[in-house]
Length: 438
Ligand SMILES: *[C@@H]1O[C@H](CO)[C@@H](O)[C@H](O)[C@H]1NC(C)=O
Ligand SMILES: *[C@@H]1O[C@H](CO)[C@@H](O)[C@H](O)[C@H]1NC(C)=O
Ligand SMILES: *[C@@H]1O[C@H](CO)[C@@H](O)[C@H](O)[C@H]1NC(C)=O
Image (cartoon, rainbow, N blue to C red):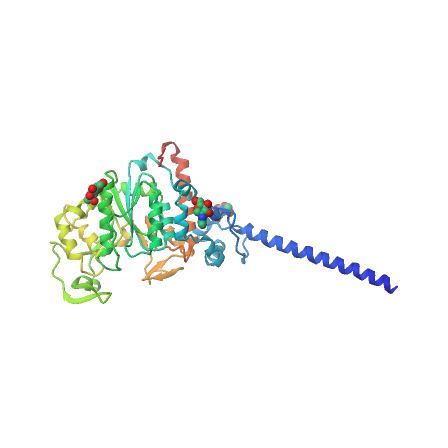
C-alpha cells in the first residue's frame, strides 16, 4: 500500500514539475512575443537600419493595444501619447536608437548604401526642380540631430552649406564632413568660425555660408538658415509653394527694438576673461539712416537679399557696427530687411512691425508662453513628443528645438508625418516627378 502510494506521488510530482516547466516556457515565450508585438517595426527599420534584426524590444508596461501610431499621437490621442511618452523615456530604446559619431564615420564609407538605407530623397517634382533652395545649417554637436534634419530637408536640386563650429569635437567634425561627402550638393563651409553664444561669430557663420552658396550655384531662389536642432514641419514641395507665394519678398520678423532690449545695442560688448560681457563703453550711433530693428536670427531671404548682404556698402558698414553688440543676429538681418533698395525687403516707412507670428519661418516655444512637455534650454522649449499636437497645429516651416537624445520619438513622429505628406503628394502629383541621379 505504502509503496504504491510512493509511486503515485512520484508520478504526481513529475507531472507537476512538467506542467511548471511548460508554463514557465510558455510565459517566457509569450512575454517575448508581446515585446516584439507592440514595438512598431517601421520604427526599427526606419531609424536604425544598421541594427535591423538585432534590436531587442524593451518591455511594455502599458495597457496598449496597438503599436505606436504617430497619426494618433499628432492628433493628441491620450492613449497613443502615453505610449509615445513611455517609449521616449525608455532607457533600452534610447540606447538602441542612438547613432554615434563613429556610426556615421563608418556608415558613410559606402555612400550609396548610406543614402539608400537612410532613405534620402533621390527625385523631385518638376515644380521643385524649377525652384531650388539653399540652406545654411549651423551645428556644433549632436550629429544625429543634424543628420535627421538634413535627411528631412534634403532634396537633390537644393544646395546645403554646413557650418561645423571651429571648436567642435574632432569626431563631430569628421562625422559631418563624411556625411557631406556623400552628396554632391552638400558641402562644408569654406571658412568655419568658432561660434560664441550671442556674439558676432554666429552671424559670421551664416555670412560665410551665404558667400559659398552664392558661389556654388546660380540657380537657387531662396536662402534658409537652420541650426542642428531645427526640424521642418513642411515637405519641400510645401516649402517651395509657400516661398513662391512670397513673390520675391523675404520672410522675417522685424520690430522696433523694444525699450527693455535697448541695452543690447547701447554699449560695446567684448570677450573679457573668457566671458562675453559689456565693457560699459557707449556705442556710437548706428551708421544707417533708419532705426535699428530687432528680429529673429532665423529667416528666409531671396537671393538678392543675400547678394546685398555681401556687397551693399551700407550693409558692410552696418556689419562692422554690429560686431560688438549683444546678439547681433537679432539686429542685423532685421535692420537690413528695412533698408530701401534691398531685394525682398520691407520699407522702413512701413509703420507696422512684422511680429514673429506674422513670419512663417520659425516656430519657437518661449518660456512662460505655453506649456512645454519637454524641457527648457535657454528659455526655449526642447519639444517632447507630447508637444507635437501643438507644433503641427502651426503654419510655420520649421520648429525649434528638437533633440533626439532627450526625445527621439518626437523627431520620429515628425518624420512619419512628413513621409505621409510626401506619399500624398506622390499620389496627386505623381506624373510630374523627375528622378535626379546622384
Ligand atoms: C492611427 O490613428 C489614426 C487616427 O486615430 C487612425 O485613423 C488609424 O487607423 C490608426 N492606424 C493604425 C494602423 O492603427
Ligand atoms: C561599418 O560599416 C559596414 C557597412 O558599411 C558594416 O558592415 C560594418 O559592420 C560597420 N562596422 C562597424 C564597427 O560598425
Ligand atoms: C568661388 O569659387 C572659386 C572656385 O570655384 C574660388 O576660386 C573663389 O575664390 C570663390 N569665390 C568666393 C567669393 O568665395
